[in-house]
Amino acid sequence: MAPSLTSKEFKLIQKFIQEKCGIAIGEEKAYLIESRLSKLLVDSNLSSFEELYQKIAVGGDQGITEQVIDALTTNETLWFRDKTPFEIIDNVLMPQYIKELREGLKTSIRIWSAACSTGQEPYSIAMCIDNHLARKGIADINLSNFRILATDISKTVLQVARMGRYDSISIMRGMENGYRDRYFKNEGRVWCLDERIKSSVHFQQFNLQNSFVLMGKFDLILCRNVIIYFSEQLKREVMVKIAGALNPDGKLIIGSSELFPDYRDYFILEQYNNGVYYRVKG
Image (cartoon, rainbow, N blue to C red; front, side, top):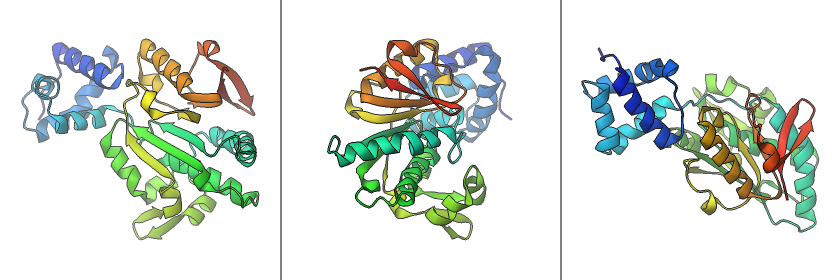
């Protein structure tokens, strides 16, 4: 049985997680640290949470550090989450991107799915694009014209994402039968993603606290349901970096429940049906 988390131990791990991941865990959520790390404590034969802290923060044990990050980061995800962002891509952005590609204004469209978890979001983007092209009978442009980057801080979820293999419960969450039947093959207990869709997404480990300079420029960034866990200062810093990483007229989509009160300094709010997205100021 794992020991209880003391106030001192909470503050040590709280500080470590905020510095490492940017996640701000308030004292009212101390139970999350205790409940999510108790098993790791037992499995690692550690006698206290302070001993765990010493291993990750002082000793630099990368293996256990990854396990702590995996345990404390939220990896809730599903296919075509919230629907509206994909309606925006399908009905608003795709016609613009096709026009730009045809007129030679762009040679490719770059899209970044930040905090991609186990891959449902970037793969949903790829399927949305491919389905749009097929539905409109577009033959001169294909999925290879769209470069999709997907990042997450967790190596574990990225390993799952790269495999493109999902169990029956995961495949049901948000997935319409039409998309499932077209883009997946059932192999008993798992559904395997079509290789063409899988190969259209490049996965990379990345911490949103780091500089975006080496990431290049993007036409669309989706940073959804992640900044709500950040401190107010880090939220502002990430949004400034996103603005700098977008091409002229580039778009940002955030989570439907996330607030972005300071957007006017860098973005123009756009609306589509019941959803919103942001266009970077020129």
